Image (tube, rainbow, N blue to C red; front, side):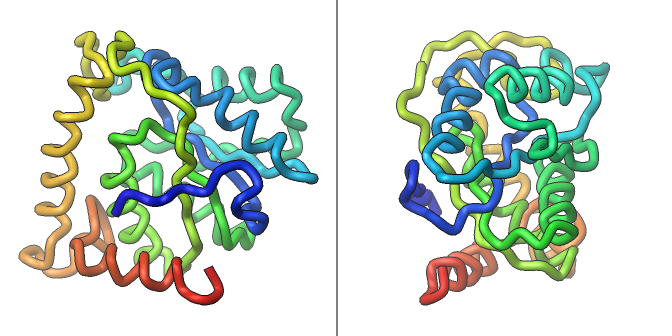
Length: 216
């Protein structure tokens, strides 16, 4: 499930990047704004940049940067405003991927690079597959591997809490969240994964076979 993620220039078909809504510490742990800027500079054209359109950190997202912070960071890195595409606001991973896929479908994007902390990748992939089923739109999504990880970076790791953690602690805790997403979206509840939480492992593997196929 862990991508051999494309690096700068490895995937000439990328049309856009998507950066998940994260806390300042999570962003700093892998220098994610710099990563997005590096990828964008690796192409002979400006990629579109999508991000969670949540207007600001609020009661349910303590410590999270918010859309205006993202917009300001990207503009400071000379990404044209016409290339910035906030999605519908998302309060958790699945609602974020719903917004991503919905906007990608509207714009006709077929290949998107995903930027987030690496321990988040499995849960994001599970949610993406569910969101694609929900919106009846498949696109090829690739995780962009950061150049480094600061395992001891202080961070707020989970929405709805102000508890300080670290990349190292959150990486273990996200395994539990991933399993919870799979369980709540599993076939035991019918096809709940098409509406919320995460797609089952079989669906994820079938998607990856399609994504990595001849036209991938």
